[in-house]
Length: 507
Ligand code: GDP
Image (tube, rainbow, N blue to C red; front, side, top):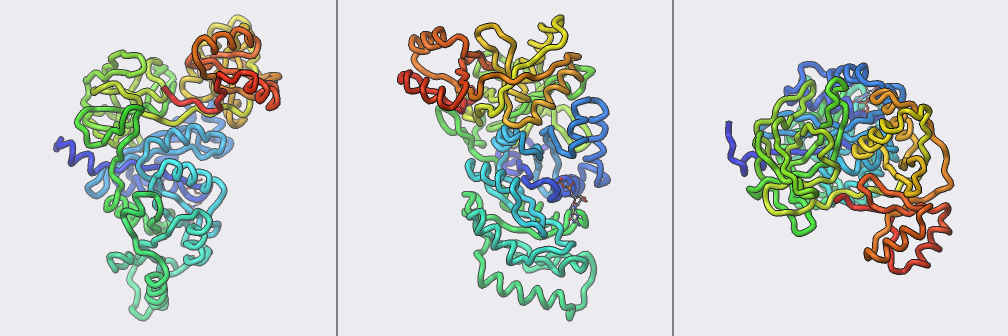
Protein backbone atom coordinates (compact mmCIF):
# COMPACT_ATOMS: atom_id res chain seq x y z
CA UNK A 1 0.00 0.00 0.00
CA UNK A 2 1.36 3.39 -0.91
CA UNK A 3 1.57 5.79 1.97
CA UNK A 4 3.19 8.74 0.28
CA UNK A 5 1.00 11.45 1.84
CA UNK A 6 1.37 13.94 -1.03
CA UNK A 7 0.24 11.29 -3.51
CA UNK A 8 -2.60 10.11 -1.28
CA UNK A 9 -3.89 13.60 -0.58
CA UNK A 10 -3.83 14.56 -4.24
CA UNK A 11 -6.14 11.68 -5.10
CA UNK A 12 -8.80 12.49 -2.49
CA UNK A 13 -12.11 13.85 -3.78
CA UNK A 14 -14.48 14.88 -1.04
CA UNK A 15 -17.85 16.16 -2.17
CA UNK A 16 -21.56 16.40 -1.51
CA UNK A 17 -24.60 16.34 -3.75
CA UNK A 18 -26.97 19.27 -3.56
CA UNK A 19 -30.42 19.12 -5.10
CA UNK A 20 -34.11 19.67 -4.66
CA UNK A 21 -36.04 16.62 -3.40
CA UNK A 22 -36.89 14.24 -6.27
CA UNK A 23 -34.24 15.51 -8.66
CA UNK A 24 -32.47 12.16 -8.38
CA UNK A 25 -29.85 12.49 -5.63
CA UNK A 26 -30.47 9.00 -4.23
CA UNK A 27 -30.46 7.38 -7.66
CA UNK A 28 -27.28 9.17 -8.64
CA UNK A 29 -25.64 8.22 -5.33
CA UNK A 30 -26.41 4.58 -6.01
CA UNK A 31 -24.93 4.87 -9.49
CA UNK A 32 -21.78 6.54 -8.23
CA UNK A 33 -21.25 3.91 -5.59
CA UNK A 34 -21.83 1.19 -8.09
CA UNK A 35 -19.42 2.72 -10.59
CA UNK A 36 -16.88 2.70 -7.78
CA UNK A 37 -17.57 -0.95 -7.09
CA UNK A 38 -18.73 -0.07 -3.59
CA UNK A 39 -21.97 -1.93 -4.11
CA UNK A 40 -22.91 -4.79 -6.36
CA UNK A 41 -26.41 -3.72 -7.18
CA UNK A 42 -27.88 -0.30 -7.40
CA UNK A 43 -30.54 -0.16 -4.74
CA UNK A 44 -28.44 -1.10 -1.79
CA UNK A 45 -28.22 2.42 -0.46
CA UNK A 46 -31.91 2.29 0.15
CA UNK A 47 -31.73 -1.25 1.44
CA UNK A 48 -29.28 -0.09 4.05
CA UNK A 49 -31.58 2.74 4.95
CA UNK A 50 -34.40 0.30 5.48
CA UNK A 51 -32.30 -1.82 7.77
CA UNK A 52 -31.29 1.13 9.85
CA UNK A 53 -34.83 2.37 10.01
CA UNK A 54 -36.13 -0.78 11.56
CA UNK A 55 -33.55 -0.40 14.29
CA UNK A 56 -34.41 3.06 15.35
CA UNK A 57 -37.77 4.63 15.92
CA UNK A 58 -37.05 8.15 14.92
CA UNK A 59 -36.04 6.99 11.50
CA UNK A 60 -39.75 6.40 11.12
CA UNK A 61 -40.11 10.11 10.61
CA UNK A 62 -37.69 9.92 7.77
CA UNK A 63 -39.62 7.12 6.16
CA UNK A 64 -43.04 8.67 6.64
CA UNK A 65 -42.06 11.96 5.14
CA UNK A 66 -39.78 10.53 2.54
CA UNK A 67 -36.90 12.73 3.55
CA UNK A 68 -33.40 12.02 4.64
CA UNK A 69 -32.61 13.21 8.14
CA UNK A 70 -29.24 11.62 8.70
CA UNK A 71 -26.02 12.89 7.25
CA UNK A 72 -23.49 10.23 6.51
CA UNK A 73 -20.40 9.64 4.49
CA UNK A 74 -19.66 7.02 1.89
CA UNK A 75 -16.18 6.20 0.68
CA UNK A 76 -15.44 4.53 -2.65
CA UNK A 77 -12.70 4.34 -5.23
CA UNK A 78 -12.95 5.20 -8.89
CA UNK A 79 -10.19 5.72 -11.42
CA UNK A 80 -7.13 6.58 -9.39
CA UNK A 81 -9.12 8.51 -6.81
CA UNK A 82 -10.59 7.91 -3.38
CA UNK A 83 -14.01 9.55 -3.16
CA UNK A 84 -15.71 10.60 0.04
CA UNK A 85 -19.34 11.40 -0.65
CA UNK A 86 -21.03 13.26 2.16
CA UNK A 87 -24.78 13.01 2.22
CA UNK A 88 -26.63 16.24 2.91
CA UNK A 89 -30.02 16.07 4.56
CA UNK A 90 -32.72 16.76 2.05
CA UNK A 91 -35.10 18.75 4.18
CA UNK A 92 -35.14 22.49 4.64
CA UNK A 93 -35.50 22.22 8.37
CA UNK A 94 -32.02 20.90 8.61
CA UNK A 95 -30.13 23.80 7.21
CA UNK A 96 -27.73 23.89 10.15
CA UNK A 97 -26.73 20.31 9.62
CA UNK A 98 -26.33 21.00 5.95
CA UNK A 99 -24.12 24.02 6.59
CA UNK A 100 -21.90 21.87 8.73
CA UNK A 101 -21.65 19.15 6.14
CA UNK A 102 -20.75 21.66 3.50
CA UNK A 103 -17.81 22.87 5.65
CA UNK A 104 -16.30 19.45 5.17
CA UNK A 105 -16.39 19.16 1.37
CA UNK A 106 -14.14 20.39 -1.40
CA UNK A 107 -16.76 20.33 -4.14
CA UNK A 108 -20.48 19.92 -4.66
CA UNK A 109 -22.40 18.23 -7.44
CA UNK A 110 -25.59 20.13 -8.18
CA UNK A 111 -28.23 17.79 -9.55
CA UNK A 112 -30.95 19.45 -11.62
CA UNK A 113 -34.09 17.85 -12.96
CA UNK A 114 -33.98 18.52 -16.71
CA UNK A 115 -37.72 19.16 -16.83
CA UNK A 116 -37.88 21.45 -13.82
CA UNK A 117 -34.64 23.41 -13.94
CA UNK A 118 -33.40 25.22 -10.84
CA UNK A 119 -35.74 24.64 -7.88
CA UNK A 120 -35.97 26.38 -4.52
CA UNK A 121 -33.94 23.98 -2.44
CA UNK A 122 -31.18 23.77 -5.04
CA UNK A 123 -30.89 27.51 -5.07
CA UNK A 124 -30.63 27.71 -1.30
CA UNK A 125 -27.95 25.05 -1.12
CA UNK A 126 -26.13 26.68 -3.98
CA UNK A 127 -26.05 29.93 -2.04
CA UNK A 128 -24.45 28.18 0.92
CA UNK A 129 -21.80 26.75 -1.40
CA UNK A 130 -21.16 30.16 -2.86
CA UNK A 131 -20.68 31.67 0.59
CA UNK A 132 -17.96 29.12 1.13
CA UNK A 133 -16.53 29.35 -2.42
CA UNK A 134 -17.18 25.68 -2.99
CA UNK A 135 -16.67 24.70 -6.65
CA UNK A 136 -19.79 23.22 -8.23
CA UNK A 137 -20.20 20.59 -10.91
CA UNK A 138 -23.65 20.42 -12.49
CA UNK A 139 -25.40 17.20 -13.44
CA UNK A 140 -28.56 17.71 -15.47
CA UNK A 141 -30.53 14.58 -14.74
CA UNK A 142 -33.55 12.84 -16.27
CA UNK A 143 -32.59 13.57 -19.87
CA UNK A 144 -34.41 10.33 -20.70
CA UNK A 145 -37.69 12.16 -20.12
CA UNK A 146 -39.37 15.13 -21.73
CA UNK A 147 -37.13 17.97 -20.69
CA UNK A 148 -36.35 21.59 -21.29
CA UNK A 149 -34.02 22.45 -24.12
CA UNK A 150 -30.36 22.08 -23.04
CA UNK A 151 -29.52 25.64 -24.11
CA UNK A 152 -32.44 26.94 -22.05
CA UNK A 153 -31.27 24.93 -19.04
CA UNK A 154 -27.73 26.29 -19.32
CA UNK A 155 -29.14 29.75 -19.67
CA UNK A 156 -31.24 29.32 -16.57
CA UNK A 157 -28.26 28.13 -14.52
CA UNK A 158 -26.09 31.02 -15.59
CA UNK A 159 -28.69 33.75 -15.31
CA UNK A 160 -30.47 32.68 -12.17
CA UNK A 161 -27.37 31.67 -10.22
CA UNK A 162 -24.96 34.15 -11.78
CA UNK A 163 -22.65 31.27 -12.57
CA UNK A 164 -20.95 30.70 -15.92
CA UNK A 165 -21.69 27.34 -17.48
CA UNK A 166 -19.30 25.28 -19.54
CA UNK A 167 -20.90 22.13 -20.91
CA UNK A 168 -18.41 19.28 -20.78
CA UNK A 169 -20.78 16.83 -22.43
CA UNK A 170 -23.75 17.23 -24.73
CA UNK A 171 -26.84 14.98 -24.83
CA UNK A 172 -27.28 12.69 -27.82
CA UNK A 173 -31.01 12.38 -28.51
CA UNK A 174 -33.77 13.51 -26.19
CA UNK A 175 -36.36 11.85 -23.99
CA UNK A 176 -37.02 8.26 -25.09
CA UNK A 177 -34.34 8.68 -27.80
CA UNK A 178 -31.66 9.77 -25.35
CA UNK A 179 -28.81 7.34 -25.96
CA UNK A 180 -25.68 8.89 -24.56
CA UNK A 181 -23.38 11.87 -24.44
CA UNK A 182 -20.77 13.59 -26.57
CA UNK A 183 -17.65 14.73 -24.70
CA UNK A 184 -16.86 18.21 -26.01
CA UNK A 185 -13.33 18.23 -24.70
CA UNK A 186 -12.26 14.75 -25.72
CA UNK A 187 -14.44 14.83 -28.84
CA UNK A 188 -15.73 11.35 -28.10
CA UNK A 189 -19.15 9.74 -27.94
CA UNK A 190 -20.33 7.61 -25.02
CA UNK A 191 -23.33 5.75 -26.33
CA UNK A 192 -25.45 2.94 -25.00
CA UNK A 193 -25.46 1.27 -28.45
CA UNK A 194 -24.27 1.68 -32.03
CA UNK A 195 -25.74 4.52 -34.12
CA UNK A 196 -25.55 4.84 -37.90
CA UNK A 197 -23.43 7.80 -39.00
CA UNK A 198 -26.49 9.31 -40.64
CA UNK A 199 -28.55 9.02 -37.47
CA UNK A 200 -30.41 12.32 -37.01
CA UNK A 201 -29.30 12.44 -33.40
CA UNK A 202 -25.65 12.57 -34.39
CA UNK A 203 -26.37 15.16 -37.04
CA UNK A 204 -28.15 17.28 -34.44
CA UNK A 205 -25.26 16.98 -32.00
CA UNK A 206 -22.79 18.15 -34.62
CA UNK A 207 -24.85 21.29 -35.23
CA UNK A 208 -25.52 21.98 -31.59
CA UNK A 209 -21.91 21.50 -30.63
CA UNK A 210 -20.89 24.18 -33.13
CA UNK A 211 -23.34 26.50 -31.45
CA UNK A 212 -22.07 25.59 -27.99
CA UNK A 213 -18.50 26.31 -28.98
CA UNK A 214 -19.49 29.65 -30.45
CA UNK A 215 -21.76 30.77 -27.64
CA UNK A 216 -20.43 29.37 -24.38
CA UNK A 217 -17.15 29.60 -22.50
CA UNK A 218 -14.78 26.67 -22.54
CA UNK A 219 -14.16 24.85 -19.34
CA UNK A 220 -11.59 26.78 -17.32
CA UNK A 221 -10.19 25.05 -14.30
CA UNK A 222 -9.27 28.22 -12.43
CA UNK A 223 -12.71 29.77 -12.85
CA UNK A 224 -14.17 26.47 -11.67
CA UNK A 225 -11.91 26.29 -8.61
CA UNK A 226 -12.87 29.84 -7.68
CA UNK A 227 -16.56 28.95 -7.92
CA UNK A 228 -17.30 31.24 -10.90
CA UNK A 229 -17.90 28.59 -13.51
CA UNK A 230 -19.57 25.21 -13.43
CA UNK A 231 -18.80 22.32 -15.76
CA UNK A 232 -22.11 20.82 -16.90
CA UNK A 233 -22.83 17.15 -17.54
CA UNK A 234 -26.02 15.79 -19.06
CA UNK A 235 -27.33 12.38 -18.15
CA UNK A 236 -29.86 10.03 -16.74
CA UNK A 237 -29.03 8.51 -13.38
CA UNK A 238 -31.68 5.87 -13.71
CA UNK A 239 -30.35 4.69 -17.07
CA UNK A 240 -26.74 5.12 -15.98
CA UNK A 241 -25.94 7.59 -18.73
CA UNK A 242 -23.48 10.40 -18.07
CA UNK A 243 -22.54 9.15 -14.61
CA UNK A 244 -19.06 8.05 -15.67
CA UNK A 245 -18.58 11.43 -17.40
CA UNK A 246 -19.24 13.12 -14.08
CA UNK A 247 -16.84 10.87 -12.18
CA UNK A 248 -14.18 11.33 -14.83
CA UNK A 249 -14.62 15.07 -14.43
CA UNK A 250 -14.13 14.82 -10.68
CA UNK A 251 -11.03 12.69 -11.19
CA UNK A 252 -9.59 15.03 -13.77
CA UNK A 253 -10.15 18.45 -12.24
CA UNK A 254 -10.96 17.66 -8.68
CA UNK A 255 -10.74 19.73 -6.69
CA UNK A 256 -8.18 18.21 -4.37
CA UNK A 257 -8.45 18.74 -0.61
CA UNK A 258 -8.46 22.44 0.05
CA UNK A 259 -6.69 24.56 2.65
CA UNK A 260 -8.82 25.09 5.76
CA UNK A 261 -8.99 28.41 7.61
CA UNK A 262 -8.26 28.39 11.35
CA UNK A 263 -8.26 31.23 13.88
CA UNK A 264 -4.51 31.77 13.74
CA UNK A 265 -3.69 30.82 10.15
CA UNK A 266 -4.72 28.79 7.13
CA UNK A 267 -3.79 25.12 7.25
CA UNK A 268 -2.69 23.57 3.96
CA UNK A 269 -3.92 20.06 3.24
CA UNK A 270 -0.40 19.01 2.32
CA UNK A 271 1.14 19.95 5.67
CA UNK A 272 2.65 16.91 7.36
CA UNK A 273 1.12 17.43 10.82
CA UNK A 274 -2.32 16.02 11.33
CA UNK A 275 -5.31 18.27 11.96
CA UNK A 276 -8.99 17.37 11.81
CA UNK A 277 -12.33 19.10 12.29
CA UNK A 278 -15.38 17.48 13.86
CA UNK A 279 -18.39 18.61 11.81
CA UNK A 280 -21.04 16.10 12.76
CA UNK A 281 -21.98 13.92 15.70
CA UNK A 282 -24.29 11.00 15.29
CA UNK A 283 -25.48 9.22 18.41
CA UNK A 284 -27.00 5.82 18.83
CA UNK A 285 -26.23 4.56 15.34
CA UNK A 286 -26.25 1.22 17.01
CA UNK A 287 -28.66 1.45 19.96
CA UNK A 288 -27.22 -1.72 21.49
CA UNK A 289 -23.93 0.02 22.00
CA UNK A 290 -25.11 3.53 22.73
CA UNK A 291 -22.20 4.67 20.65
CA UNK A 292 -21.60 8.15 19.47
CA UNK A 293 -19.71 8.71 16.29
CA UNK A 294 -17.97 12.02 15.72
CA UNK A 295 -17.40 12.59 12.01
CA UNK A 296 -14.11 14.35 11.50
CA UNK A 297 -12.68 15.69 8.30
CA UNK A 298 -8.94 15.26 8.13
CA UNK A 299 -7.74 18.73 7.15
CA UNK A 300 -4.01 18.07 6.90
CA UNK A 301 -1.49 15.29 7.22
CA UNK A 302 -1.84 11.59 7.78
CA UNK A 303 -3.91 9.86 10.44
CA UNK A 304 -2.74 6.52 11.76
CA UNK A 305 -4.87 4.33 13.96
CA UNK A 306 -3.68 4.39 17.55
CA UNK A 307 -2.29 7.91 17.48
CA UNK A 308 -3.28 10.46 20.14
CA UNK A 309 -4.55 13.83 19.13
CA UNK A 310 -5.04 16.94 21.17
CA UNK A 311 -8.59 18.20 21.46
CA UNK A 312 -7.72 21.89 21.35
CA UNK A 313 -10.84 23.07 23.21
CA UNK A 314 -10.01 21.07 26.34
CA UNK A 315 -6.34 20.28 25.95
CA UNK A 316 -7.14 16.58 26.38
CA UNK A 317 -5.37 13.89 24.41
CA UNK A 318 -7.84 11.74 22.52
CA UNK A 319 -6.59 8.27 21.56
CA UNK A 320 -7.78 7.08 18.17
CA UNK A 321 -8.29 3.39 18.91
CA UNK A 322 -10.95 2.71 16.33
CA UNK A 323 -11.35 5.39 13.68
CA UNK A 324 -13.71 4.15 10.98
CA UNK A 325 -14.42 4.48 7.30
CA UNK A 326 -17.98 4.14 6.09
CA UNK A 327 -18.87 2.40 2.90
CA UNK A 328 -22.19 1.87 1.21
CA UNK A 329 -23.02 -1.14 3.33
CA UNK A 330 -20.60 -1.36 6.19
CA UNK A 331 -17.83 0.27 8.14
CA UNK A 332 -14.23 -0.73 8.61
CA UNK A 333 -11.38 0.31 10.85
CA UNK A 334 -9.37 3.09 9.28
CA UNK A 335 -5.74 2.07 9.69
CA UNK A 336 -4.69 5.28 8.03
CA UNK A 337 -6.41 8.28 6.52
CA UNK A 338 -5.27 11.42 4.75
CA UNK A 339 -6.32 15.02 4.32
CA UNK A 340 -9.70 14.99 2.59
CA UNK A 341 -10.87 11.80 4.26
CA UNK A 342 -13.74 11.67 6.69
CA UNK A 343 -13.39 9.28 9.59
CA UNK A 344 -15.87 8.34 12.26
CA UNK A 345 -14.47 8.45 15.79
CA UNK A 346 -16.46 6.50 18.39
CA UNK A 347 -16.58 8.32 21.73
CA UNK A 348 -18.81 8.83 24.73
CA UNK A 349 -19.54 12.50 24.39
CA UNK A 350 -16.04 13.91 24.63
CA UNK A 351 -16.04 15.21 21.10
CA UNK A 352 -18.26 18.10 20.09
CA UNK A 353 -19.26 19.68 16.82
CA UNK A 354 -16.65 22.25 15.89
CA UNK A 355 -13.82 20.57 17.78
CA UNK A 356 -10.37 20.78 16.27
CA UNK A 357 -8.06 17.81 16.77
CA UNK A 358 -4.41 18.58 16.30
CA UNK A 359 -1.04 16.98 16.37
CA UNK A 360 0.63 20.33 15.73
CA UNK A 361 0.20 23.68 17.48
CA UNK A 362 -3.08 24.77 19.08
CA UNK A 363 -5.42 26.20 16.51
CA UNK A 364 -9.15 26.19 15.97
CA UNK A 365 -10.72 25.73 12.60
CA UNK A 366 -13.27 28.41 12.03
CA UNK A 367 -16.19 26.23 11.21
CA UNK A 368 -19.76 26.98 10.69
CA UNK A 369 -21.64 28.87 13.35
CA UNK A 370 -24.71 28.11 15.39
CA UNK A 371 -27.62 30.23 14.25
CA UNK A 372 -30.13 31.72 16.64
CA UNK A 373 -33.21 29.49 16.56
CA UNK A 374 -36.40 30.82 15.06
CA UNK A 375 -38.67 28.77 17.28
CA UNK A 376 -38.40 28.37 21.07
CA UNK A 377 -40.35 25.80 23.05
CA UNK A 378 -40.43 24.85 26.70
CA UNK A 379 -40.02 21.11 27.26
CA UNK A 380 -42.84 19.54 29.28
CA UNK A 381 -41.94 16.33 31.04
CA UNK A 382 -44.82 13.97 31.63
CA UNK A 383 -43.12 11.80 34.26
CA UNK A 384 -41.33 13.88 36.89
CA UNK A 385 -39.27 10.86 37.94
CA UNK A 386 -37.39 11.17 34.68
CA UNK A 387 -36.07 14.70 35.14
CA UNK A 388 -32.48 13.59 35.49
CA UNK A 389 -32.66 11.33 32.48
CA UNK A 390 -34.23 14.13 30.44
CA UNK A 391 -31.45 16.51 31.40
CA UNK A 392 -28.79 14.09 30.23
CA UNK A 393 -30.67 13.21 27.04
CA UNK A 394 -31.23 16.85 26.10
CA UNK A 395 -27.57 17.62 26.64
CA UNK A 396 -26.52 14.71 24.43
CA UNK A 397 -28.96 15.51 21.67
CA UNK A 398 -28.04 19.19 21.77
CA UNK A 399 -24.35 18.30 21.50
CA UNK A 400 -25.27 16.21 18.51
CA UNK A 401 -26.96 19.25 16.99
CA UNK A 402 -30.50 17.87 16.89
CA UNK A 403 -31.81 20.97 18.67
CA UNK A 404 -30.30 23.84 20.60
CA UNK A 405 -30.70 23.70 24.33
CA UNK A 406 -31.31 26.67 26.62
CA UNK A 407 -31.32 26.20 30.38
CA UNK A 408 -33.03 29.15 32.06
CA UNK A 409 -30.97 30.60 34.88
CA UNK A 410 -34.04 30.90 37.11
CA UNK A 411 -34.22 27.11 37.26
CA UNK A 412 -37.41 26.76 35.24
CA UNK A 413 -37.74 23.83 32.80
CA UNK A 414 -35.37 23.74 29.82
CA UNK A 415 -36.18 25.24 26.47
CA UNK A 416 -35.21 24.03 23.07
CA UNK A 417 -34.62 26.12 20.00
CA UNK A 418 -35.01 24.98 16.42
CA UNK A 419 -34.86 26.41 12.95
CA UNK A 420 -37.75 24.29 11.68
CA UNK A 421 -40.55 22.42 13.43
CA UNK A 422 -39.52 19.04 12.03
CA UNK A 423 -36.61 19.16 14.46
CA UNK A 424 -39.12 19.16 17.34
CA UNK A 425 -40.71 15.98 16.02
CA UNK A 426 -37.31 14.35 15.68
CA UNK A 427 -36.41 15.35 19.23
CA UNK A 428 -39.66 13.98 20.64
CA UNK A 429 -39.33 10.70 18.75
CA UNK A 430 -35.71 10.22 19.73
CA UNK A 431 -36.30 11.00 23.39
CA UNK A 432 -39.05 8.39 23.46
CA UNK A 433 -37.29 5.79 21.32
CA UNK A 434 -33.74 6.03 22.59
CA UNK A 435 -34.12 7.31 26.14
CA UNK A 436 -37.63 6.20 27.10
CA UNK A 437 -38.61 9.76 28.03
CA UNK A 438 -42.00 11.10 26.94
CA UNK A 439 -42.20 14.85 26.52
CA UNK A 440 -44.45 17.52 25.11
CA UNK A 441 -43.81 21.11 24.11
CA UNK A 442 -45.27 24.32 25.43
CA UNK A 443 -45.01 27.75 23.99
CA UNK A 444 -42.96 30.31 25.88
CA UNK A 445 -43.32 34.08 26.07
CA UNK A 446 -39.89 34.31 24.45
CA UNK A 447 -39.57 34.97 20.74
CA UNK A 448 -35.88 35.59 20.25
CA UNK A 449 -32.61 34.26 21.58
CA UNK A 450 -29.33 36.15 21.28
CA UNK A 451 -25.88 35.27 22.49
CA UNK A 452 -24.46 38.01 24.67
CA UNK A 453 -20.82 38.96 24.38
CA UNK A 454 -18.91 41.58 26.30
CA UNK A 455 -16.33 42.45 28.90
CA UNK A 456 -16.66 40.15 31.92
CA UNK A 457 -17.75 42.64 34.60
CA UNK A 458 -20.36 44.25 32.32
CA UNK A 459 -21.60 40.88 31.20
CA UNK A 460 -21.88 39.54 34.76
CA UNK A 461 -23.85 42.59 35.85
CA UNK A 462 -26.22 42.23 32.91
CA UNK A 463 -26.70 38.52 33.56
CA UNK A 464 -27.60 39.05 37.20
CA UNK A 465 -29.97 41.97 36.43
CA UNK A 466 -31.75 40.01 33.73
CA UNK A 467 -31.82 36.64 35.42
CA UNK A 468 -35.39 35.80 34.46
CA UNK A 469 -34.55 36.33 30.78
CA UNK A 470 -31.18 34.59 30.78
CA UNK A 471 -30.34 31.04 29.82
CA UNK A 472 -27.20 28.97 29.30
CA UNK A 473 -26.66 27.25 25.99
CA UNK A 474 -25.18 23.77 25.55
CA UNK A 475 -21.67 25.12 26.15
CA UNK A 476 -22.73 27.20 29.16
CA UNK A 477 -22.56 30.48 27.22
CA UNK A 478 -25.08 33.18 28.20
CA UNK A 479 -28.12 33.75 26.02
CA UNK A 480 -30.60 36.59 26.39
CA UNK A 481 -34.22 35.73 25.66
CA UNK A 482 -36.50 38.52 24.47
CA UNK A 483 -40.26 38.52 24.29
CA UNK A 484 -40.30 40.62 21.13
CA UNK A 485 -38.05 42.22 18.55
CA UNK A 486 -38.88 45.55 20.19
CA UNK A 487 -37.66 44.31 23.58
CA UNK A 488 -34.53 43.03 21.95
CA UNK A 489 -33.71 46.37 20.33
CA UNK A 490 -34.49 48.24 23.52
CA UNK A 491 -32.23 46.00 25.59
CA UNK A 492 -29.40 46.39 23.10
CA UNK A 493 -29.79 50.19 23.17
CA UNK A 494 -29.67 50.26 26.96
CA UNK A 495 -26.58 48.05 27.07
CA UNK A 496 -24.06 49.65 24.74
CA UNK A 497 -21.13 47.74 26.11
CA UNK A 498 -22.55 44.38 25.11
CA UNK A 499 -23.03 42.68 21.78
CA UNK A 500 -26.21 40.68 21.11
CA UNK A 501 -25.53 38.25 18.31
CA UNK A 502 -27.69 35.85 16.35
CA UNK A 503 -24.68 33.75 15.38
CA UNK A 504 -22.18 31.98 17.57
CA UNK A 505 -19.02 30.45 16.16
CA UNK A 506 -18.09 26.98 17.20
CA UNK A 507 -15.26 26.97 19.66
P1 GDP B 1 -33.99 12.36 -4.52
O1 GDP B 1 -35.22 12.76 -3.79
O2 GDP B 1 -33.30 13.55 -5.13
O3 GDP B 1 -33.07 11.47 -3.78
O4 GDP B 1 -34.51 11.57 -5.83
P2 GDP B 1 -34.56 10.02 -6.15
O5 GDP B 1 -33.23 9.53 -6.58
O6 GDP B 1 -35.26 9.31 -5.07
O7 GDP B 1 -35.46 10.08 -7.47
C1 GDP B 1 -36.77 10.61 -7.46
C2 GDP B 1 -37.58 9.92 -8.54
O8 GDP B 1 -37.04 10.21 -9.82
C3 GDP B 1 -37.55 8.40 -8.38
O9 GDP B 1 -38.81 7.90 -8.76
C4 GDP B 1 -36.49 7.99 -9.39
O10 GDP B 1 -36.70 6.68 -9.88
C5 GDP B 1 -36.66 9.01 -10.49
N1 GDP B 1 -35.43 9.26 -11.23
C6 GDP B 1 -34.19 9.49 -10.73
N2 GDP B 1 -33.32 9.67 -11.74
C7 GDP B 1 -34.01 9.55 -12.88
C8 GDP B 1 -33.66 9.64 -14.26
O11 GDP B 1 -32.51 9.84 -14.65
N3 GDP B 1 -34.69 9.48 -15.15
C9 GDP B 1 -35.96 9.25 -14.77
N4 GDP B 1 -36.87 9.11 -15.73
N5 GDP B 1 -36.32 9.16 -13.50
C10 GDP B 1 -35.36 9.31 -12.55
